Length: 411
Image (cartoon, rainbow, N blue to C red):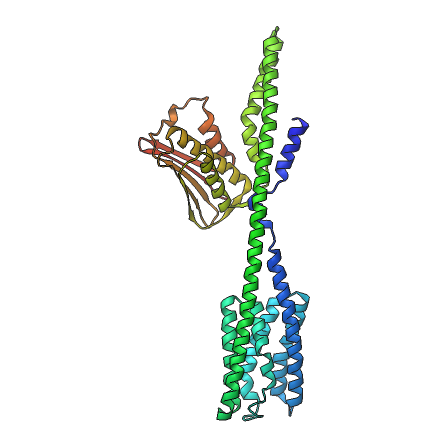
C-alpha cells in the first residue's frame, strides 16, 4: 500500500465515530455549574451557620442532654455540608444528610425547648437555618423534592414555632410572616438553580451536537479521500496486470500476469469491506444508525420512513458500520429493482442489546436461488457482511414484495 493511502487510512482510523464523541464528551458546563452552586451554598451556609451558633449560645439557658443532642444533630451535619461543598467531594451525601437531620431537629424542637419561651418577635436560632435546609435539598435531591422541601420545611417550622408558643394568638402573626418569607426565598433559590442547570445543560447539548456534526463531517471527508486513494491504487494495479498480460510471451510470464490480475481484482473487491472494518469499536448509539440510514434515503431522493422501535441501546462500532452498509445495499436494491415502491425501514432494539434492521418494499420480488454467481450485491454486501460480524440475515421475496432482515445480538 503506498504511503499516501496508508496515511489516509491511519487518519480515518484515528477519527472518533459520532457515537463515540457523544458518549465520551463530558458535561463540562453542567459540572462547572454544580461546582459554582456548591461553593455559593458553602458560603451562605457558613454565614448563616455562624449566626445560628451565636444565637444558640446567647439564648441557651442550660446545656443538658436534649439540648446538647439538638446542637449535635444540627451543627454536625451542617459543618460536614460546608466542608464538602467547599472541597467538592461528597457534596450530595453531605447535603442530603443535613437536609434530613435538620428536618428531624425541627420535629424534635417542641420536645426540647420550653413552651412559651421567648417573645413572639424573637425567632429561635434554628429559624436561621430553614433556607439552608432548602439549599441542601437543592444540591442533593431531584427537582420535585427540592420544591417540596422549599414549601414543606417552612411549614414544618411554622408548626414547631406555634407549638413552642402554645398556639397563642400573639405567635400567629409573626410566625405567618416568617413562614411566608422563607417559602418565597426558598422557592426563588430552587427556581434559580433549576434555571441555571437548564442553561448549562443546553450549552452542553449544543456543544455535543456541534462536535458530533464536525466528527461526522471529518469522517465523511476522510472516507472520501480513502476511497479516492484506493481507487487510484486499484486502477494502477489492474492497469499493470493488463499490461503484463499483454506483453507476456512465455508460460511463466502469463502465469505471473494471471496472479497479478487475481490479486488486483481481490483487492478491488475487498476495498469497501476494508474501509468498513476500519475505525473505533466504541459503542454507537441507535440514533446514529438511524441517522445514517436516513442520510442514505436522502442521498437517493427516496420518500421513505426509518421507523424506530424498542428501547434505545448501543452496539459496537464495527457491528454498526457493517449493518449500516448491508442495509444500504438492501435499500439500493429496493430502489433499483422495485423503484422504491412501498420502501420502509424499521430499526428495532431490545434491552439485551439486540438490533434488527428490516428493509421492506412492495416490488415484484425476485428468485434468490436464480441469482448468478458473479452478482455480489446480495452475497458479498449483505450475507457475507452480516456473517463477518456473527450476525444473521434473512431475505424473503415473492410477488408481493421483498423483506431483508438483518439481526445482531451480543454473545
